[in-house]
Image (cartoon, rainbow, N blue to C red):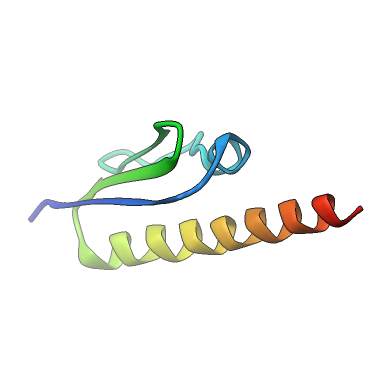
Length: 75
């Protein structure tokens, strides 16, 4: 079974650069892009469990990026 998932979420260039994936396992495709107002994540994998892990990591890093930007803006 092949699982494909695509989503778009609010973001900016800084968040996009912090979420770019640089290392993936064979059989796993993770692409992230930015169109000027939205981040787009595309995942292709062999299992639902793998997709769940990718999304869990992605959202943890997304939230962390937003919190760091907020802290930097406050200073």
